[in-house]
Length: 306
Image (cartoon, rainbow, N blue to C red):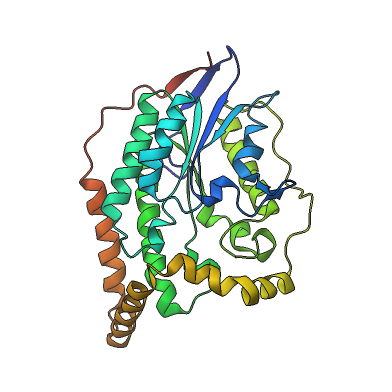
């Protein structure tokens, strides 16, 4: 359930018969973007966490891919992850949906509900996280950032509720002060650097260890390389950043400009809070429209590691 829920978190009792299997589903954050390793590949928090789930590490499958929407997670990644028969699965997605003109919180809720409910029925322990909004990380002007803030808040509202519904172990990344600090971000300001990925892996390991699901060494929070400094970020933005943002937001840009115009009109009229309320109601409506689920069962759950 949610880390901040008022009800006591259930206790998981692992039965150690064989190795731990761990699958990761999501987008570029979980793919590992921002944490490069020799050979031109990404490592990332999920791989770092996998190494600490058991003394000899876990059998790890990463299905996450850059640019993935929640529909991709449900339709493409979920079948691959289920074939791995994971004991633990991370599901972190929705950020890319907020950057599309076709953003629909109802569809996001349905896709995430499908993924989490399927994994829960398989007996998999689900890890989730709520994320900071891209507008704040990119430090966009308020008229552009606020619509993205509302979209990310709507996604996080859904993730909070579904995490509670499916007894997930939930990490409030959006509230972690280190996540938005320059020292923990890569040059694109949207992804963690090595330090950020290590911090994320360490926090997830703490949640799992508290639940009795991780008995390997916790991931180190000491990076092997120095993170990008202000000059690195300025050079990246001047040489690659503008093209990077345009390439990813060309679908969103016309819609975002319309949203910014609406934001400006409501601010002038003093009714911007109506936009907040409308977005929150949309998230609640999306949750209310989901099919009811059966009771989660007893608070003590046995995790078969066979």
